[in-house]
Image (cartoon, rainbow, N blue to C red; front, side):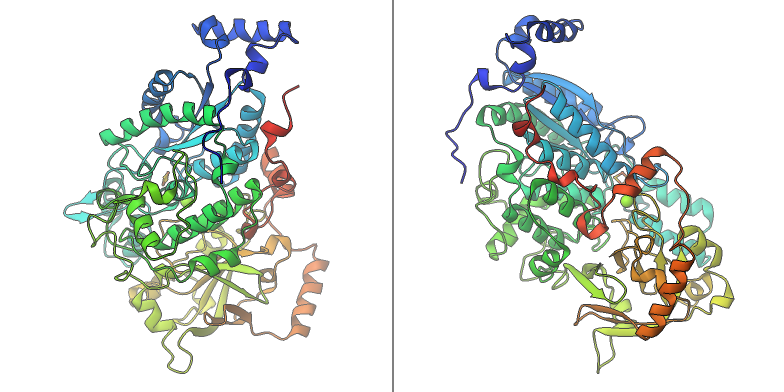
Length: 598
Ligand code: FES
Ligand code: MG
């Protein structure tokens, strides 16, 4: 356990190398004169105050985080009130809905950029402003690598979306309404109106998509102030916690409280439990495994199953539940989830958090204020609601989010009395989403109500960054017959706002020679959830022959690189089950301490 009495002195501040370094008077002077030229005083730079970076993730290109431009004014006031000097700088923009080919391509790019900034500039600590999906993992991965005192300030979810008296959740409504549009129940104008209604204010998605999940994970990990993750973006408490975050980071610098003190194996296990209990995004294991690897903690998808699968679903929020961010916050937010899990003996309560106290101390008395929205542990929405880590002869790892297996899906595919947790069927195979859209309604594919839809070429190499396309909707003809979902399997990802129980993130991906590259239309697959297996029912000799033919053709084909970064990322990226990190990058740890600037 860390000694909380430990404090550093002003001459131990990292920024002194730049602003008070008698061995390099020229460098020091140059640094001082240029930072003074916009009004920072000599006293601020040279009197031993902590210099605090504020990594600004909001911009016109990243609308989900844009109100951080306002919020950081309160962060700066907090930093100054506590005796620090704030320096704001930008994060590479990451916006989920607009970035092509996918926002996930930029997680590692933003990570690399932030590592260089935190390492190479005169910063003693940093406030990480987060929100839209990948801004949170990119920032935490960089803070883990550099290991200077760091605290997360999320932007918070949007207000609830309403269409008449119906709650409409951002992202989730799109998946639902696409089916209604395909079935002919609504027209395009109605489709558009519901979707725009789902996003009524500043903030990130108001559902438990990847943004809400990752910011809840940051709080569960101990990296943001207790109760802060899910304060809706426009609420006054959001600006208040921005101020508190500013004051706290200055103290964290004096206490030398670093990410490595907080991001322990136990903290990651806590995050896994919370992810199950909130019905969190299937992108969370990718990002959390990445943060763990950058911290030097071994974490795999087996841990997600062994630690998290039997945790029940407590949060009644879309896509797994019925409500949205405002009700979740009013019911007690992440502290109420932690409270239930701790009382049930499912958390490591002694884990340290950014406020210097333990997780258990932070949540004393923070029980659920609305047991309909945040359920009691013994009255959950779903038992055993975490991820299953499936394996077999097609891949080494693929995840299934069990909290979203609907009663209808269970009844159609998992209700054979002799074999209640297994199903078998022929596959229809698609190579990327363009191929899917071109062929899904082609009657020659003969897709029936037992067909398993397979998406490949959608992993981090096949579709640079990995595409969120595995949750495929059945052909329109089937939807019109009332079959709204078929089992889906793929080497890509799916949006955290989707309620589809797909088997996804399959690793290794087809483009890296994974077994999915050998599949052909009409092959039969057997999925057995009790055994944790997905098996292709084709004999080995045939698979060897198929692999031989594929290799003769030069391997699985994917589209050409469009930019230098796409090529670099494809060359270096590791599989989704390992966190989609860059080869070699996870070997750099504690960078600020081990390599003083030269
Ligand atoms: Fe940005 Fe959902 S699209 S948070
Ligand atoms: Mg997404």
